[in-house]
Length: 237
Ligand SMILES: NC(=O)c1ccc[n+]([C@@H]2O[C@H](COP(=O)([O-])OP(=O)(O)OC[C@H]3O[C@@H](n4cnc5c(N)ncnc54)[C@H](OP(=O)(O)O)[C@@H]3O)[C@@H](O)[C@H]2O)c1
Image 1 (cartoon, rainbow, N blue to C red):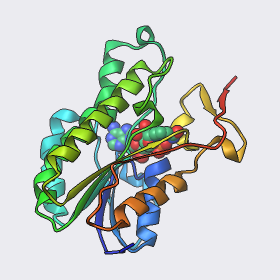
Image 2: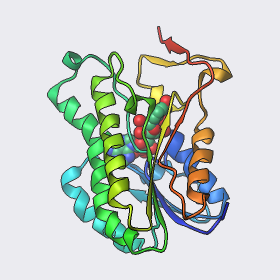
Image 3: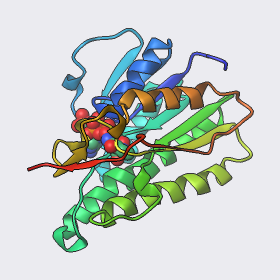
């Protein structure tokens, strides 16, 4: 493993998986640019951490905002895409607006961010695009039509992007976790079971990201699936 100082943009850095990834990268001495809709969620100033406020669901404003971001931080040589949200229900339970909004935050905004940063990433000696997918990117499940579709879209995107970047120094990786104990479940009617073997920890995903980022430059880790040892879904009362 080679630990070279990187400048990593982490979306969803204010909570859950993204926050654990940002912390782990900071502990390793990397420069982390953390994204959230609300800058004030980053309460403690930390060496090597640059907070950025950006609402990834505002697609129309995104190209301009991303241009500014790339100009402010020209050294970005890795992006971890962790912003996203869970919403579950049958298709008929979703309004048209809800379908569009979930696809926007879980897929389209990632494509916009990639589109905006790829030209400069291609000019770097090495760069990484690491996407947090989901087990829902691998298999459709009941009440998951729109969520699974958004994650399948991410998986198709990363596979094609990997081909597209095959002659450059840009590496593309998709990480598909099963249930991770985070704030993700706060608004949902279910959550992982209580036993430690029923869930992944955000730190598990952070370590996986560090493994990918620090791997030998000449290899690409295309996709990693990881799951809790004993999957238990607990429905809230
Ligand atoms: N937890 C799980 O079981 C699990 C399993 C597999 C995959 N995942 C995936 O992992 C990713 C992270 O989930 P998590 O568990 O860490 O959830 P979380 O704790 O709820 O964090 C979600 C993050 O996304 C950011 N976000 C949401 N909407 C945004 C927007 N419009 N613009 C910018 N940022 C936005 C939030 O930031 P602000 O609210 O501060 O803006 C927050 O930092 C998601 O893509 C999720 O689908 C989660």
